[in-house]
Length: 401
Image (cartoon, rainbow, N blue to C red):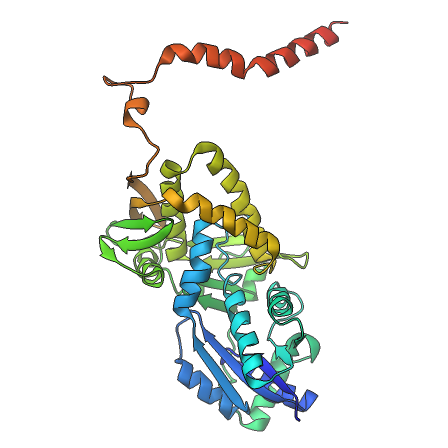
């Protein structure tokens, strides 16, 4: 029986060429797997037909946009996850759902190997292969670009030689990955970290220097999940799309960062994540009034570690699963409304309300109606500072000897 290899297929030049390239290099039949995570562009049917036209024996296509929003974007939102304080894990969270469908297709079509189009320098090779090892430990992994020396020049020559139904003449200087949670751009002149990004880099966001009139939006949450925008019920996918549109029109969510890749190098990345950044900002402000102080402080540490794990390809790891349980527990009372103004590249919160809020007006006010007993503060301060006071006295005593 001829060996079968499942290929993560985007419909672009490299993965289209990889179908025949893998076949010639290994003698195996190739099944192309395309997964829609809200990246837009061509229809799944167009991509499926191209895969077949490029030599795939089967083409598995999956509309996973709602699945991606509910099971991958929402947990990221609940964690307020920003890798290195900047990056909302746009590409990192899409890889596990693609892996899930790759393994499912491998089982369905009797494949023994999974292939992906990643290079040997990036994070995605780790995310794909660690995920595949976890969900399909019996499956092998190959990467044509990394393992079979498939360069872009070779890909263009191969496509032209074989007459493949794929555009080969237009060379985009950037490497772009996008989905409904955001868009990532790298390489080209961006590799000189002194170069400012030019306007042609951006697609999800308008230039914030000349914004339209301010856009006020009310986002409603239930247990940490966005459920309505301006009083209109939405699914998580609809919430992300709506805020991509409205926050994007105001230039919200542009990120220019040099980040630490898992493989040990620093890489300059440009991200656009208008919906993600607006939602994370709103969610964090709602947590500020609904999560108890010590729980909130510890959750910030957990969220940072969660982001690192996911960035490093550990979505299916035991530690990630345990942190998920903690984060989910913190969301019990994160329900209510956040009002924010979107304008000039910023999403600024200016109102919050919740039936489960810990904010007590009578304790917080300095006016009539104040129920806070200020007479207790003096003794509290004495006890709170006792340990540092005793240690300071020792320092003075020892220094004087």
